[in-house]
Image (cartoon, rainbow over all chains, first blue to last red; front, side, top):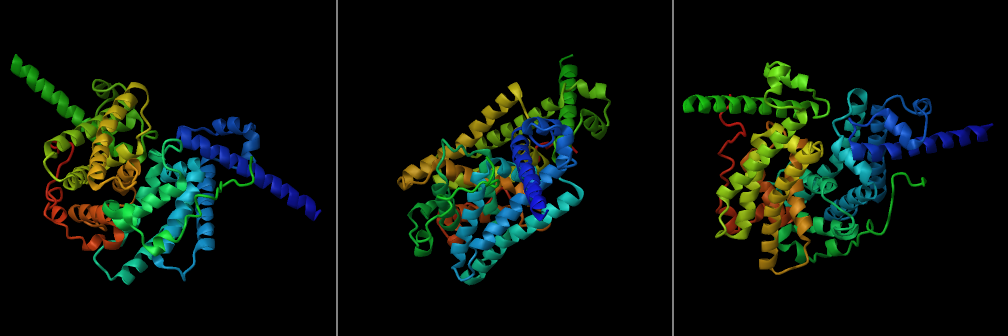
Length: 227
Length: 227
């Protein structure tokens, strides 16, 4: 009996993951507001009634995608983060986690960057909470760097959101076939961010060059076990 | 007679500008796809028939806003650009022009950054052409900097779009009351971009510090002559 419940839960979860994966792709391509629940039923090969067994509205789908993205980013960060490491190295690891996730989940990246304001009510509140937790990680790292560096008058919000801007804007211009591969993209963005465009290419600091990018070798789709 | 034609043209133009200004605000607040032409009629105090005298669809409104933004940015750049100046100073002026425009036209900034893909067909083609011209200016400046600096392996696209990312992401986080004023925001972003977050605050290069930001003092709304 216990076994049967477990296996039907797994089946439920897998089906839901498939629905979320298909929805993220459609939202990214058509835009959330132009997508109907019928489009999603069609893409998943399900009946409307079948789909309503899993979610009640397309808002709920958008919420579940965004929630799963932030939860994954947060969990992966918690596994990676080592408070013993140099704070600059931790900023590097945060960037690797963020960009590694984004470039392996491009539809979800677009949905997160672009449909940020499409949720309302409780869904919006919940996602905002997760997002605030996530942004605070980088903001705290920047604060720590600033206090170690001696406060030289840089504004923590500008420094924090400049990195998010560089990373999140990628969905508007990046073409995998035309542009740098992930590991090199991460390296160049961090060179610009830490050392600036004037000297970034030459920077050879040990804390920077010794942490070889893991993110470039690893692939991790949000929907790991799905075809 | 000539006078009458001129004055009715001016009246037509002013009315259209008022419609565009109101539309940009609604598109920014509600999102393009959730806005109806009725919403725009209501906001401008016009009848639907009156509105249709100026534009045929809300797509046309979005097109006219985006076209006017890019034309203004391009014209202002052409007035500012001085090929005799140090290329780093010209990158600084480009940033001043871009951010100065954006922070004085926040609704239009959001519409440009966020509703980039909402146009289709000929409208989309025309805006893409303008956008490509505009992006090419910064890309050429970066290319020039790179060849003067000696090619050190930085990717021109990453360097170009990292600056656009930092600037264009502002619409998601910037609060005028909470965040830095324009001149200081420009200064800090450029310090990060040119010198990096590790040494940006201390940079005292003459070409950087001698060009005091004009953009901070000047206000320029896109709709200069409107109430």
